[in-house]
Image 1 (cartoon, helix red, strand yellow):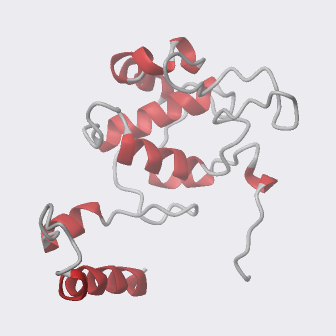
Image 2: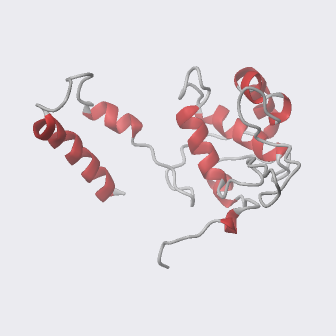
Length: 172
């Protein structure tokens, strides 16, 4: 992770020098503070997960306030993709790519939600709201119980149904 962060910072520092004449000079260089703010990677094993906790019970309230208008009642889809309620597997025609049938890691769900949702204000949910809505979505997909607490330790231990459905190219 240190190497990747170092390369990112190096690229940000030298790119204005290398490409100064080729750019339309839109925007401004990222400040060190901005890079640090967005340098919040979460890995499948849970490395990088923040403090906080939540349950599906609280997550239902968060979902109703921030997610329902796009993802529909109980995540069955509306103007945005369905998140739960799959009636078909991945090998059916058509396949249902819901959280329960497709996503390999619960930590990826947390990370994606934190970075990109809600659509009209990404990054606005606090850590406990994120854990709670993640718990609710896992509950809707019959992966965890309604009262199970999701936090940095428990979320990383969730075994997703499609965990082994992807090829892992990392050497062991």
